[in-house]
Length: 367
Image 1 (cartoon, helix red, strand yellow):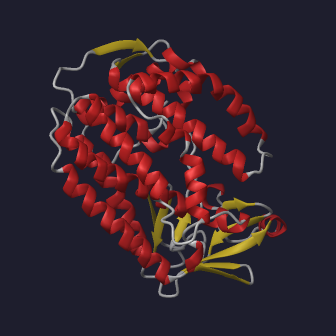
Image 2 (cartoon, helix red, strand yellow; image 1 turned 30 degrees about the vertical axis):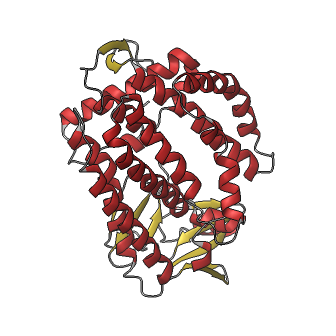
């Protein structure tokens, strides 16, 4: 189930990619074996990382099992079929259940696909809860995430990223408990706390225009203003993001260096540190926008007019956010023939530099 989020930087060697693929396929097969074919789609980078962390802390050599790839039955893949993949598969199901419930809540029960998915996830959810309980994992931390997140976002002076950070910290620390590697537990708590905050903030960046158009909570709203169809994220908001990401990066780097791992030290360091560092570089580029980051709002009829009259603007479905009845484009969209470059990063946005280029262009990745 490899998709865009599983792409690697050139800093990841081919050998490390193979290790990652083994744990990705191990998670995919653990999901299929315990929760059915449909559940294989729940294979995500974060739970692959948990799978790797458990394996890295086990003193025993891992047992590699060859299995048929469900996407290509003619192809054999290497998998880890053990406690690590069992744990990460159960977590993948529970996180998907929580995320889907969040969609239902945001839509006030009108998201029909999410309601259907909720029914499909109910049986896997019950099996996952039993598995986590048998592993002495407090599953309530996961099941209560949605409620705690809503409370944090609606209570004044609460840190909105805290619920995500708390769950992530518990998950990371659990990898040390499963392998009886108590030295790592405190360091993994710190790493998990920061990683959860990072994921929350990246969601805020990726969903920024959509959240503000739909009236949903976003921590960047306090740094924003909308006027005459133009949405602006202030310079203060950009600098706030830079400060948060810098603290997260530095803490993760320091704590990761203290981990006692039997294998995969370099790979895990890259997977934890590199995406945050790359996104920090991208956000830092935005600080060059002295008046902040602006998005122009277009109505659907404006988009049709642009197409009908063969506007010189470059229309690309990957570079706009659909928000209700409106589209938010970054201002200064690059015209065809103009210079400027866009570098993709792992977590869903690009930064563009050059004449006529927008400072930030949201990217939507397909499978």
